[in-house]
Length: 290
Image 1 (cartoon, rainbow, N blue to C red):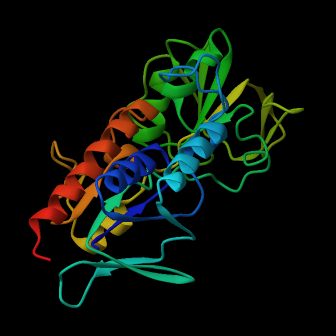
Image 2 (cartoon, rainbow, N blue to C red):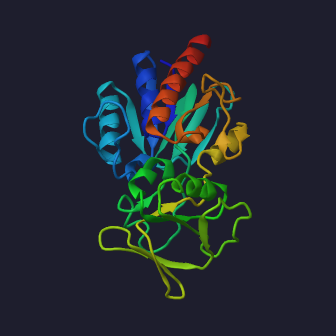
Image 3 (cartoon, rainbow, N blue to C red):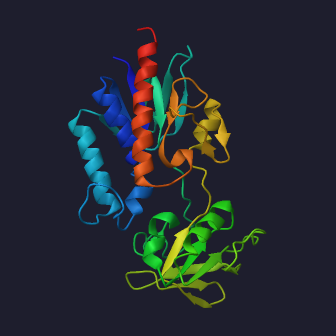
């Protein structure tokens, strides 16, 4: 039986796996954790849930549903993805496994690089966030900060502006961006820590000065799937994978979905794209000779 390899077990990856499995393919999911969804404190803008639930809860339900259908899971960091020597299929590698596949769905998301600052990891989901469009609503009338200095950080700051009382951009010693959204307050000093008793309450700079904030949005880079894309010759649109309406990349047999393709970084979009990618991968396999 021909195999579809799905890289990533967030909403896009699980959706692709479920649709491909129900279509009759053998499906293996390779993942090293859930990704951005796991860090979502509350989800209350997604269809089908009467009450808010955490990202971890939603992710766990998705994985359990895929396992019930018979999707195989390999937990581990993807360390390599390459063409077979015959160029007819792919070989993926983790530290403990080698997986062959006839088609691949890249759904490992856009990486959110968290700097090694005290308090950032400890307060994830408790005021430290990785998606302004997801969580900006919770900071209405409050002060919030964005950690980063690139285009992604500027976009996150812009998403916060309509909601937060004040938006601070923390460049952590990086150069101040030239194109600042109006109303964003810039702090270029090095950061020592993000602190709070159970939730984010302040940012402490290296010189001892404190900035009271209710939330910190980490927006340091969005490389995501680009490293794999470059190795396979997949075209990029900025830092995101370029796909057509079937979620196909320019490399035959490779599809992408979710945050890896950019656009609206929301669960609803990821689930839709994952479904399309899974069905497109099935169609690709059916067009190949057995």
